[in-house]
Length: 255
Image 1 (cartoon, rainbow, N blue to C red):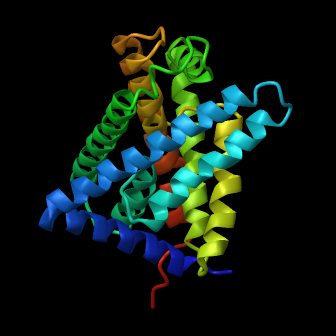
Image 2: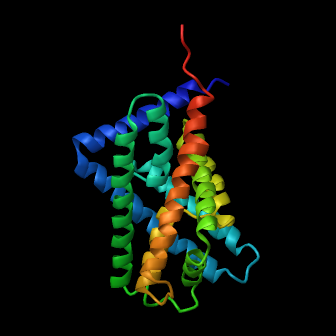
Image 3: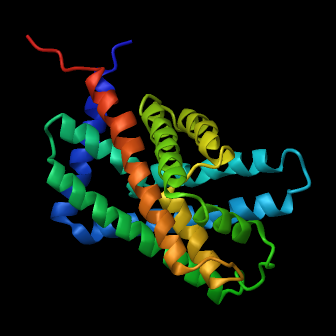
């Protein structure tokens, strides 16, 4: 089936995002902050499920299936997630509707907004006493430690794989006309990157923020190390493995 219309839909979405940033930067930033908030509360729920169901052979399966709820919320509320925007803005730029400099600026604003959102929810959880109640051996703390103690190469390539899968979920959702169909596509595809333990920079923001405020063992420098290489990997996964091929294999029909 000819997919040109879906390329145009993605390209138009990228242009819409850029236009919003240029005409109403506060509104765009707030959408970015909300995406970070939604994903961080999802992250804590995911790690809590992993911790509470660790004795069940299906514990990680259930937790990984749940994580797709976070991306579903973001898609349905028009929040702005850095990782999926690596695909949207690459397609819109490849189609000539936006420029690479504009794309880089939007990515930067979105990334920082997601970070602020992650920190806000972490602060709320700290104020509520939720983080203090997490035991030292909680799965979140162990997971955060594992993430930061990997090599730069492992983090980078896991970042590529993570956002390739996440953007694939978003790309497939573009084909769906019904909301239920979008949910049925997003959740099982996102499951792949969680279950296989890949590195998603924005999800990691929430994990690291909670770990740093709680009984975790990681340092701020270690968190920054992971975020640097996972972010680079996420850009490659979303832009090079998904965005550019998406536009290239569905060329514009010319007279």
